[in-house]
Length: 424
Image (cartoon, rainbow, N blue to C red; front, side):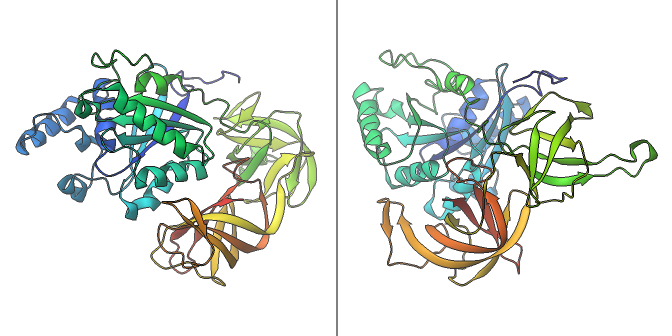
């Protein structure tokens, strides 16, 4: 990829990762430790959490207070909502989504994990693989998160024994054989004491692998994006009302996948009009190429009727265009999903309406079995459903393209997002 950024920081690679695991596995403490040991905390923040920790009578600084922002979270010592944290090292920029462990907050985990390159799944070294480990691993598999890092935490409570680590590794490997997981790493850590988080542990000489920070900085993510299928959902048509730019017509949006260059022959959906890319612009400058997830403006060699929700693709590589298709849906609302129910959906930049034709099956997340009898889909449930839309949707399967293969379902009356779907 070309390096044309004016600012080195802007051009640094961004890694998005999410944390998951059972309650009290130490997710918030691990993130606090990452920030603390990599010198990402301001002095006043540190003083505040030191003061709060001593007020509670803790022997150690409670680093989980850095991410647990809600009053109820601090009182109960749990994570309820998704907390996002941003930090950078000389090698990479990071966005962390600290997600809840409780079953009733599964929808929050789905939200935090939907855009992640990697998932950190914490397992208590004393307890091994639990129901929530299975649940979160299944969701990570369903969301096609490319990299899983299994952090076997609280090694200090099992005397840093290699046998305890290997036992959990074996348990997880049995689970992962049933899931669609591409890349898995295992790390023995103590989030509380900092073993193998940023600095190598002196207590586990038997472990020769990387620390968590080293792994996060060197994880190969450039091939995670789909660079083959060119997809550019149009978000906005730019027509400056100025004499200087009288004939200017630009199409702004974010590249979902593929690589676009000036001179490329493209097709516009749904009109099937063909044109050639004239320029690609970023921050007002022309650039030689655009790829996911860059937000750019594309101009064409001729005027074509294009509006928000249309998609620019390569002439000989087009997505599916259908009104009926199946979706794996994570239901996010207290009101159950209704067969025959009418909802609004959003797919990339396109808005449409749909009707739920059928519920194929519900997934028992604890056993990973399909239940074709129980058609009651309530909050936090995951099911395969069939929907019909009012207009054709231009999509790829979620497995092939996470951007053009996902939809959200919206309640038209309240405008709430009530479902997140992966097109099968």
